[in-house]
Length: 527
Image (cartoon, rainbow, N blue to C red; front, side, top):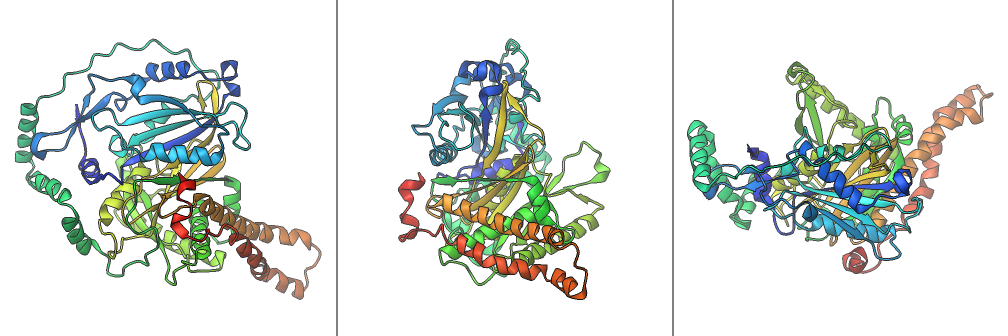
């Protein structure tokens, strides 16, 4: 029996009917590498059963302490039912990408049963019409409550199910499992009183739990206390969210992002990713005639690792507010502005306690999804006229750099659906896997009725940056013999040449303009 941390307990208390704390990981597989060219559901169920003993997440549920005297505990579920948690569904014909995103969004939005272990696995078939996928491809959606995830073991439930080779080991017989009897109410009360007596700071926790349940009055008061001195420029994404979610994604090559980052000296891949997300947000708001005059910001999780703590120590989560340069028309200037901020964050982090800032492009496990969307969403509290502390969240969830296999089936795609909350209805999940970077925005259906248009704006922002990067790299190769003063001047004006190519890209960005009627026009289409 282990106890929840204070942060995890806070996330439970702040969960509402229209804003759950779910984080969903989405993978797509090519079954041609599996034995017999397909993966049967019974084989997958046997695989999960054979690995249940490898992590306590699978069989533990929450046990609350009476009267809120202490944080809840994880106890073993005496009535654990594997087939409740592992489910098998199929898309209706024709099984296109739009239907898949709608189905994934609906699964993600439904709350988990807090009386059971806080995870569900969905095997989704019927993807035959998805462009570019091998015949028989299927998806796996893993939904977890972020209270069941921590920074150290965020991807544990995923990595335990995969292998590094297409030859899956023979499933071992399930180990005998005898659940421990959960503690009674009297024992939990005694533990709570004892913990409070030994830690006076715990005396405030029942009061804090009560405040968390006091409703809008307490939330409004807290919002006044937490509101920044200079409120951000609100957008359609900084209002109350509905219970309905939308999810989309676009895939890119990691090497192409490496080319983009070279547009600005010392920029990193993560800076390029932030710039592309900012460019996509700018295009979408501009297409809907909602581009604000002031800049917009994003909350980005930063992991700071203490080198004195040893190689196995967990990094600490800190938060950086990055101004995205959404009001900057020039994409290179936007990237440079982002780089100046991230460079300053590195200097500050290294100056505090001799700590080392980890690379934003390689730091965050799946827990970051929940932490970004929910911890910060809980901190926002204010809605309506009360400004949140940022316009959106952008979290990086790196996957392995080599292919993984699920019972022999090769993983071809890895993405994530993030939690959102009132005041912050837009979150980007940036995942990486096998030489690719996947950018996946999550939002509310009322705030983003056209997720395909938003994702296309991200794609066009990327293409604009890539055209600039390739233009600068290829220009010397087109005129290798000219080294005169006039040609040197021409070489220095490469940015101007690129600038002349941008109007075409901006014109293309106007193509996914939202239909008249705004947010209500596409409600049925968005699922």
